[in-house]
Image 1: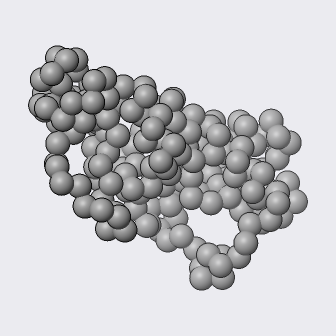
Image 2 (image 1 turned 90 degrees about the vertical axis):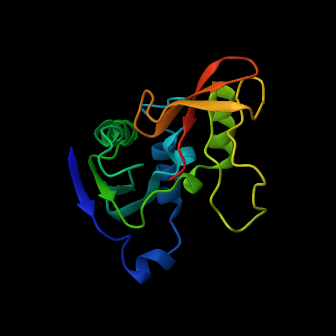
Length: 179
């Protein structure tokens, strides 16, 4: 396993280059890996998979951005990506941690948000200024849809989630915190 950390997303030339068919195929494979802490969503849906490059024959470099700098799941993500790419026949796989730009909950895809809610985890509210501004700051219960919820603990099963309870149906649930 080769892992490392990169402080930027690469050069301007790398950012403009269109992915090859092989890079697209390998990205789809790497992106299909389930998140080890939230197996209902893939790394692509979670938005932590940044890029896949093929610098030479039999060599692949994958860029991952953790949900937060100390995320312990990054090692498992890297190992799982290496495994699926080795199974595809790629002998030399390098997974690099990219910290800039930082991951944001806005990186979670619409499908990822839908899957989180379906699984019983309230998805984060979007920060993006590209659409309508939410009129409420409340968190919607993923069980009954009520916005009458209360915070029980700022931390839940993982550092990126908070524990809440719905005042209507009284069910506890995790809320993926906005970052």
